[in-house]
Length: 231
Image: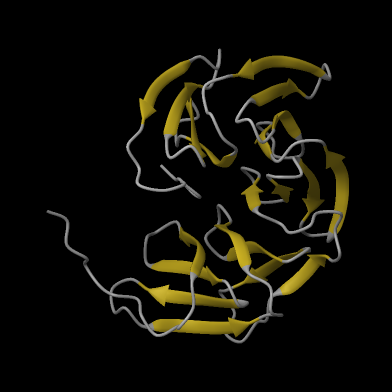
């Protein structure tokens, strides 16, 4: 039996996205009606609350340094430094070509951030310090190069659940991943980078080998659509 360690309560709204910071002391939560709250795990108290426009806050992700946070609010991409009290979120990408930003990934050095939309299957790469969009990417999930300056591959998908893995350097399709029977909503690399986790509206998760992209495991049996998955 799993019992909750603490309750993070106080916002009468649906939670749309969450992420732990690097030391596990804070949880950032994005809500359907535009709220972003930083919760202290030990006390269960809200450390900071921010209210953004009335669009859901999605793709909440901490940077590798544990200081900065990136998230999508409608079509806008935000980055904020939470180490400075009262520092408001800053939009580094406004009115992007995405209907809504649904996924965020930081590069390993924290200099670049990728934002994507799973149902349009498109995204873009931003230089965080310059606040500029560096390039467009015709997929909604990526694997960064080791230096964090660009991507080495990207993944696109469609409503059938098929995913396509593309080699960015050679600009060619590497493999089609077949298995899910409905749209894939969330993807996540394992901490060691050797596996890829996919979550789908077909009520299942799958684990794929991150080198040859063969399926390693199927995790079925969820009572409803799976919207998000993390390692």
